Length: 115
Length: 115
Image (cartoon, rainbow over all chains, first blue to last red; front, side, top):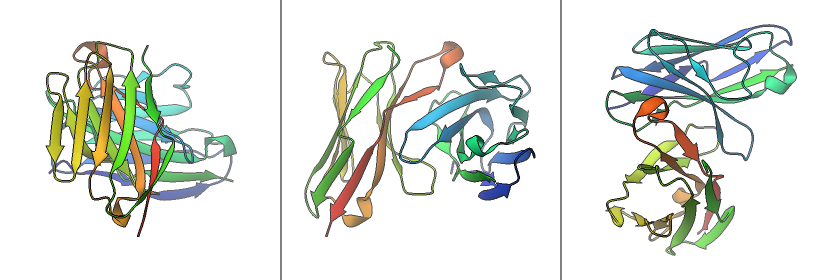
């Protein structure tokens, strides 16, 4: 149990376009979902925390207008990178927790390349 | 105070040997310490986790040793195998409040196990 999926696994887009990444908990209801960004050979950097039905909480330095997060249901959260630029190219990973348990279950990640 | 410092940055071990990765923290409010394994291009997967009321936890070939007074914890991989070659991250989180479940990650250790 505790499977988290992400879609797409890889996306290439042109500079200035927007990209949406989906994160789904497949076999449990996720009370909280987290979005991370990871550059090559670096650690995971938390971007934001989202709870179903409420606004996401962004980490310091993360532009909330650029990285839009919607946690519409207990099994789905989306991250939209608006007006993407080459510096937004990275590996984006989501994770989810289920009620009362702090264990985070991670998705497989989405590789974003902005040309 | 929120940092988790991980060492070494990289580690090379022969097949059958013991791999040891260390982490240190400052925030005494941390009460949950998981270790994650990440293969290239994949999301992190939970390996094993411990709470500060336990000094050691073992699951198969993986053991966490926890020293609360020194604010240090370590991962031991016994009988290391080439398939264990991956990046390992330690992490820590605090209980309750707005930071519930929010993980602070170490910098990561790239483990290479030679056959």
